[in-house]
Length: 187
Ligand code: OFO
Image (cartoon, rainbow, N blue to C red):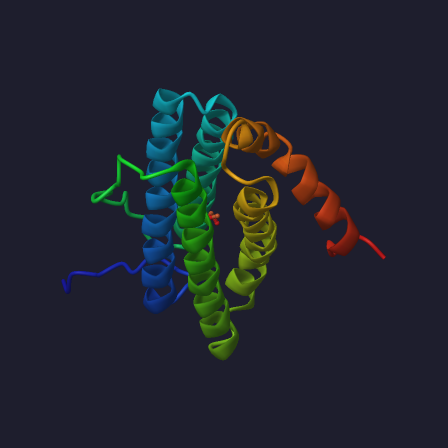
């Protein structure tokens, strides 16, 4: 008797699966990079920035896991990413937040590329799933941009760096305020 080969039903194409797995790598790297930044801040006495980054590292892991579950539920195979090349030393607190901003902009570009591809091939389910990331990136970019701005507003001399560290603790509230004004759920 001819051997039957079983192809499990899938609702994502292999191409979208590969793109989502690439995004999983990116989220895993974000989580690791922010954990490393948190640790550096801790060692330098930037206590509030350290807490901010520890929390963000956890959030990025959550973003990665959300993708894992989606890929598998859609009939694909989510792959545990290799995370290498993480930077452990930083020149300054400012460099840390500039890197966060740069990184978040790269993540946004990557999400947009997948969203665009989903539209082209009419994968509306993945398009819809990714809207959560589109909104999340808008908020995270706002947060990171504000973090970089406060270095210029306050200045780094004297007690400036201490004050900047304190202000980092207020960033979440700032981003929530901005989001409340421009978010999709508001009129
Ligand atoms: Fe901010 O990177 Fe996740 O999505």
